[in-house]
Length: 247
Ligand SMILES: Nc1ncnc2c1ncn2[C@@H]1O[C@H](COP(=O)(O)OP(=O)(O)OP(=O)(O)O)[C@@H](O)[C@H]1O
Image (cartoon, rainbow, N blue to C red; front, side, top):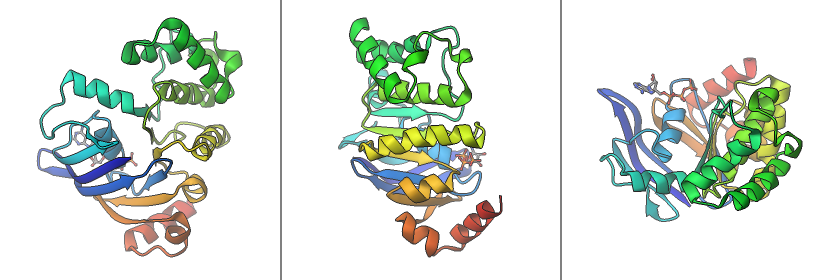
């Protein structure tokens, strides 16, 4: 379980996250939606310590990520990286390494897996995301959607407690984005715990167990998608949903 309490993040005087509380239970998919600049990416990046929170606690399976606001130690960072799998908007793959090596590298570095075991795990996961045939290719020989699926396989390879997705389809053409969303949907069906920052409202509506709306650094509304999309309570949610419907 991921449990966030009293999380704040400021850059100088600029408060970007203000007293965030969020619980994500095992197997749950939480979609984070809201206007641009609301703090969605920052929240995700605080969970895996790409950003150091200013105050509050984040615990993953009961263990605090680190004692905030102090900078995490190297050991704490490693522990967080083991427990969270991050998928970014850009894919951040190593272009000079094969697809297979992109998926084995972190397993060896972060988990200390032996090369043979890492290879077996990587091949299984590449198969799971439909890319077994691309194992020996270089990322540049793959489409954007395929590269994002490689990034998903790489994140899954660390057996994370929670997968964090930061707008995983927004750099992709809509139809290619659908390939990626289909893989994410399968992961959700298989019980993967996920926090997903997304502008893909169809995904949030059909796949998420909870949708949280962020505005000006605060969660203004949070509920099951059936409730949120049909009876939005907060004016920000209503405005946001109207705006995305017009796009
Ligand atoms: N490193 C930083 N230094 C200063 N301000 C930052 C930094 N990172 C983010 N911000 C500010 O924090 C606010 C929230 O940004 P964030 O990227 O989390 O929003 P978002 O909801 O993910 O937006 P979008 O949907 O456009 O990606 C913005 O006002 C942004 O300018």
